[in-house]
Length: 311
Ligand code: HMG
Ligand code: MG
Image 1: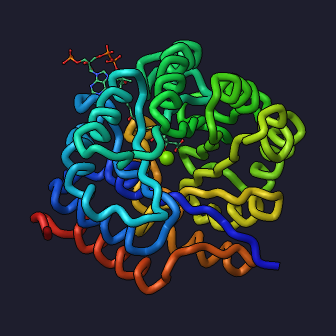
Image 2: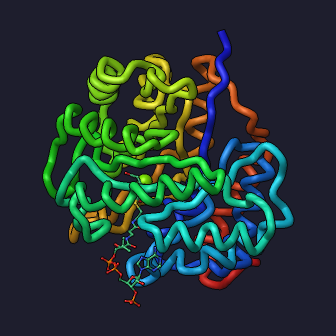
């Protein structure tokens, strides 16, 4: 039986945040345009984070303004915001274009204290304190809110993470009003049985709608990095257990710079083409036009191979 699967393309954000060459605003806008043309459900365009922490994405406002005239009906656009300053910058973009160009903002924390501190200079508790006004004000402005939990399987600094720790953080994010809970295998450590164990814990704690007391519920999203080539099998495991929303990056770009260690650069996300093929083989359908996706992949690979701007 065919089942609709929702795909969020995170290449322009998770992909480019860890690339040594900083693409120009024109190149980033072109990448986002080629991705929007694929028919993907959502494109995570950039992050409104400190440019000192992630210089690769210091031009988030300019990229959004550049793509504003090209946003197609049916594709949502989103951006990461770590705090109210980031939310202000996102709302400012919508105000500047006079419409809801940015549909959703994403807050992010972790199931590992060490990773949270390294990534945001804040403990898990402190990140959640920051999110309370962010989520309230985003909703008041008509934006949806995604909440990422990183290190749901393992942390590059603390090792294995218990599924219960993930569920504890998830419960607090849902209590704050997050519309989506996005579970990130930040370093691509998962094997399918780890995903099975994690989802058993999550579903037994929250049910499949995650927030059963709310009529709208909240959606569960799985965000896989592909260090050992197991991400497709992990996605299939999640699909078989009822997950219908996934993140991926064009050409398998990506990785959190604060998940890199001195020995190893953080791994890329699962490649969108690989994810779509793996889910399609199990009956998962998307709105993505495959030739357009392949075109976007070729464009992204060429842009990152090139020493000079190509757009
Ligand atoms: P901090 O240094 O503790 O912040 O950083 P602060 O509040 O003390 O401010 C310091 C400076 O940053 C000030 O500027 C602020 O104005 C500025 P200064 O006075 O020095 O010139 N600042 C900002 N500038 C722009 N936008 C903002 C902002 N906030 C403060 N929003 C902070 C705290 C959270 C800002 C910092 O740690 C940060 O930006 N971290 C982001 C790290 C990041 O983006 N990591 C990658 C994304 S997460 C990820 O990839 C995982 C994921 O893919 C899922 C998975 O795979 O697991 C989502
Ligand atoms: Mg990631």
